[in-house]
Image (tube, rainbow, N blue to C red; front, side):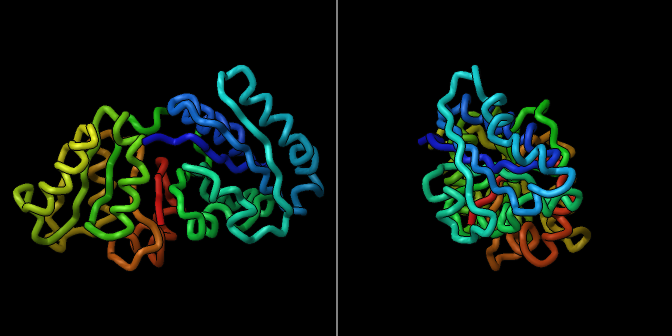
Length: 260
């Protein structure tokens, strides 16, 4: 089980160079092919961004050349909306950056949220301003709530979880106990895949919300990646990527791997 094809989305914004290097590191780690997909809008080829938009292919090839990976460059029409136009159905992992208001008009509006909703494959969403000088996937927090979305996210992230030095299984529930059979079953399943798991449950006593508890745990564990389900109707996924989740994503401080 591994990632063999990784798609990274390209645009004329300030985050692209570090996003590409993050994707290169992942492609090298999993011996994957890297596909750079130019998702520039028509507006990107006007005004101050025009030069950068015209140079996207050249900059992508410069960023991956000599790194020991297979790579391809693709470009989609500015008006593209269908999932197949974003090459997500031919990928094992997508890499994008959370929308940055400063250059949002340079990138197709379907990236990242619309693509993730339709893709059927996991997406690594980087915070705006993310610099490729930090490890991703060494200490991972799995936001787990026994839902379909969380189950899908865990299995989609398995190649990363298997290589991590430690994985924290975060469960926020009023009746949480390490001894509950469903908690132990989830832990055992990951361990059967060779994942090094530590339980990180948080009993919900009504004193804080799930997101605050999650981030308090992240501070404690010095995690570098969150794995979670997206767009579900469970309390967890609604908090992470729907309704109140807009606030969560707009204040992202670390990468999040999401699956729908």
